[in-house]
Length: 144
Ligand SMILES: CC(C)(COP(=O)(O)OP(=O)(O)OC[C@H]1O[C@@H](n2cnc3c(N)ncnc32)[C@H](O)[C@@H]1OP(=O)(O)O)[C@@H](O)C(=O)NCCC(=O)NCCS
Image 1: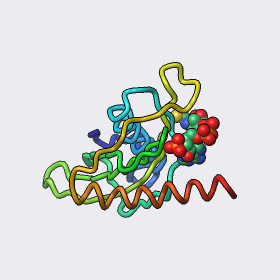
Image 2 (image 1 turned 120 degrees about the vertical axis):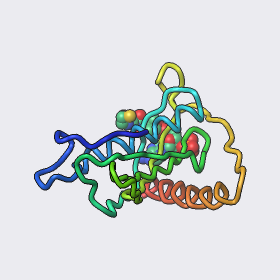
Image 3 (image 1 turned 135 degrees about the vertical axis):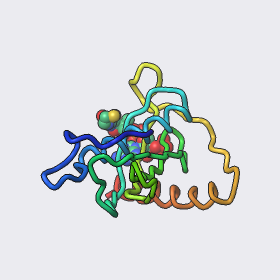
Image 4 (image 1 turned 90 degrees about the vertical axis):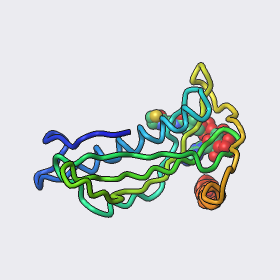
């Protein structure tokens, strides 16, 4: 997902409003989850989101999302947000977030199984391990 930061997306300091950044992460996560399972999904939770560097007005932002772990009906999606200077083309990672999405079936009524995740390379296997840790943390929270 790509966008350009307009004045109405900024705070009083001319940098992008955090709530809009989170909305972009959520949308990008939803797109990855929808493409993966091809059924309606909802956001169940998000892990820690670190805003590493501010994003300036007029910068190009790009979100890359990937399903990194699946349970029975849930998916952990990693979203990485890059900012790019529009004239110089310099690019940096601004924010990374992990969101849990749950497939809820065509009627949107109840959690529904998702396909198996194929781990195609070392990067996918490494990210899968991160996703598994997140799923464990979620299960621990639910039990608390
Ligand atoms: C997410 C939701 C569908 C889960 O429903 P539920 O009845 O608690 O479902 P279950 O307990 O059967 O769990 C189903 C799956 O959701 C996962 N899940 C439930 N709560 C979760 C949470 N807070 N965070 C991450 N995953 C969660 C479970 O781990 C389980 O995953 P698995 O099937 O891969 O093992 C339900 O809580 C919901 O609809 N929440 C509101 C979502 C929403 O409105 N989001 C914002 C707008 S999109």
